[in-house]
Image (tube, rainbow, N blue to C red; front, side):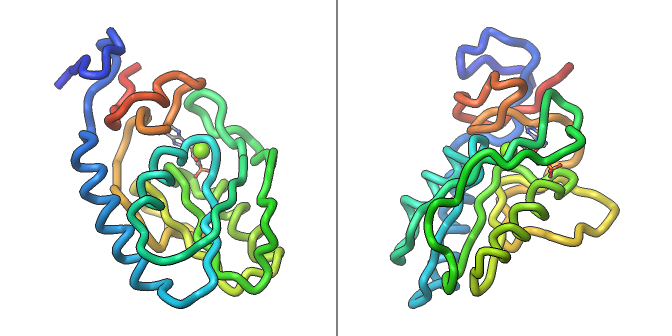
Length: 180
Ligand code: IMP
Ligand code: MG
């Protein structure tokens, strides 16, 4: 189905996950996290820029206290995985002795999340878990995986709800497949 609900004026986008379904899943994940981290010192670290809508929506629903931090890791240019993960910013909080949840937009090869988990562990976190909005199905087992997963997807490049293609489409409310 080709839609233009978000006034993109583009026939390149096919809707994959409507906003209402995203929010339904976000609430389920928030409930799980609130149960798991009750009474624990928690820092939630969002991966910029792609996770910002997901992060905000999930954090609003949490019923436990926590601190917020950000990391900016750049690993993608266009639709091909770049050779290297680039660490641009953060975290700025002292996370030693804290439980940490990293919130990401999408796990593809797993290179970004592997790098990020390792970095946070080295800073002395008690434990590090990963919450991702989307995970791409792969046959190979990833050595670092997510603990909380919003949706599994197969093929296709995903945009919207924070996810971009060369900085386009991040602003879209729903999640789309980009047809090229
Ligand atoms: P990985 O290191 O291969 O797991 O890639 C993770 C990062 O690449 C994500 O945080 C995204 O920024 C980007 N990425 C991977 N697949 C997609 C996609 O389908 N759409 C938009 N960004 C993607
Ligand atoms: Mg990203």
